[in-house]
Amino acid sequence: SQTIHQWPATLVQPVGSPLSLECTVEGTSNPNLYWYRQAAGRGLQLLFYSVGIGQISSEVPQNLSASRPQDRQFILSSKKLLLSDSGFYLCAWSPGGLQETQYFGPGTRLLVL
Amino acid sequence: GEDVEQSLFLSVREGDSSVINCTYTDSSSTYLYWYKQEPGAGLQLLTYIFSNMDMKQDQRLTVLLNKKDKHLSLRIADTQTGDSAIYFCAESDAGNMLTFGGGTRLMVKP
Image (cartoon, rainbow over all chains, first blue to last red; front, side):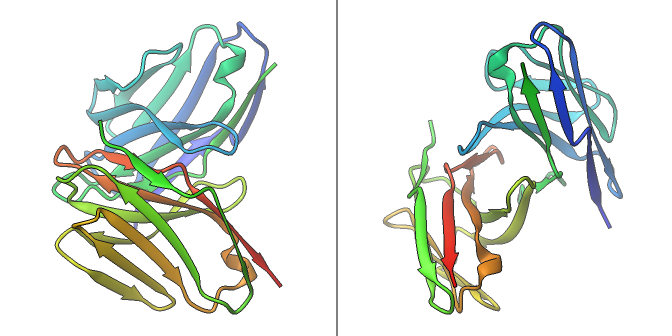
């Protein structure tokens, strides 16, 4: 069966520091991968998605970037964090095809101070 | 662009039925989804319905779709305290991307 992992689970970082959040998927090949951000008490905002290694699409301009160095690994990064980057970051995968059901990881809570 | 709207909050008593509503604007939606998010956790897929269906039932969950009105609802029968969570409606478009509503916080009172 497929599983999706995210780490770390929680992260507290100072403003201006770099960021690297990792997401990995097991049990599937060539998944579509997604990064979402959820501000406190609010809905989901799609940040990036990837349909293959090295292929990244950005949905909103921002301070963050994403990379997909391997088929089942998706990384969210920043060179310098802002206070507004605080939130709950969710990674998701989908098998691709006509029905794009997405399956979510447990999330990373980021607090920028 | 596409828009998905949900009411923010719903409170019910344990044992009652809950009905969470969602409206969307994209007439080319292919699938519509309901996800559940418990505090501090990721989203859990509850159920989904293909856009050419009117209803889908899965144990205590019933999904109703009115495609003409672009209205989706999730009914939870015999609501339990463990059902307290945020429920997200989402639709997928022809490009197979999901658009999420803002979530409905369901509070179940004992």
